[in-house]
Each structure stands twice: as C-alpha cells, then as structure tokens.
Image (cartoon, rainbow, N blue to C red; front, top):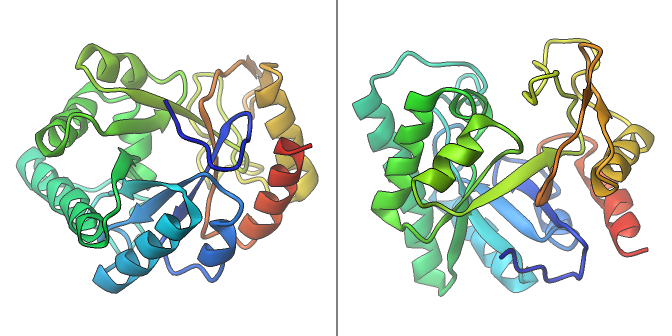
Length: 244
C-alpha cells in the first residue's frame, strides 16, 4: 500500500532530479518522487540531493530509469539490444538504490520514463525485461505504470505489486495510451484543465480522449511532470483540492 504523508485521498507523484528548478518546492506538495538516475538525466550529485530532500519530506522514493539517451531526454524509442537495455536499467536503478542506502532511505518503487514507459506499457517483451530487472534488484519494489495498460496485469502475474498511474497534465487516446506529445492538445498547460482532469479521475468518471472516445481509469497515483514550467502551479492547485 502507498504510504501518504499528507493525508491525500490519492497519491500525488512527480518526476524529479531532471534539472528542474522546483524540486524542493514540489516535494512539499507531492507524496511520491520518481528520481532520474542517469539514463535521460541525473547524476550522483542530483540523486543525492533529491533523495536527501525526499527523505526530509517523508515522500516515497522511486527510481526513474529510461533508455540511455540524454540527447533526446529519453523521449524517443531507441535501437538497443535487450541485453544492453537490461544492463542499463539495472545500473540506473542500482545507482539510486546505492544513494538511498548511503542516506538511510528506502527505495519504494520504480517508474520508467518517457519512451520506455510508453512502450513497455504495451510491449510484452519490453514489459517482461523491465519486470525481470526489478525482480533481480528487489522483488518488493513496486512498479508504477500506466493505468489500464497490459503491463499492469503482466506485472501482477509475475509477482510484482503495481501502482496504476494517471496523469494530471497529459491527454489520452482511446486505448489508455498517452496521446503523443506532438499531437495538438496532448499536453495540458493550464491549471483549470489539469484540475478538471483530476476531478474526473477522483470521481471515477470518464475522460474525453483526443481521438473522440471516453476513457474510464482507476488510478492509485496521479502524476505531474516535474520538468514542466507549470509543474509547481499544478501541484499547488491539486494539493489544495486534495486537502479540501
């Protein structure tokens, strides 16, 4: 079960350690942090800072591994062998785990980033590779992944606990995938629309998708992208709603 240090009715998470200026402020508003660990962003210094701040804020700490592709911030598919990808993800998660161990913190979950997140949610081979890597490191780690995606059931069948995640700042397609960022309207950029989406999620009401459908999602956690210029504003508004 997700521990929730702020008494919210649902977990609120953000991706941190990606060079954003608002990490410390976001940690006062969220309940779970996904910390970049060297694939798309992050290094020993940023991981140490993020873990120390998360520990002080009582926030669940998670690894945020990606394709090893800093050039594209891990947001594009990458041609890489399964063996190389497994080794990279293993190294990324273990890097954060080592930082956690050194600071007396416990790593709680793993949330893949960007293209790895989107592809693994629907690609069984990538999903199994991710599951295998997590289980090698610590089978008690939870997998945070796209709500209602095939990977949810696959991970549970393989013995992992799953945190089903929905997004405050992204639109969806009818199959529960995130609308591609290049699609008009895919990224939510104002407080009102973000709050409207959160209200629908909290009320278990269907979300309008960009391809004209209605999608009902059951989520354990709601995400805000920490590198967004709107992240802090969204977090403040959503936090106020969750404590109302």
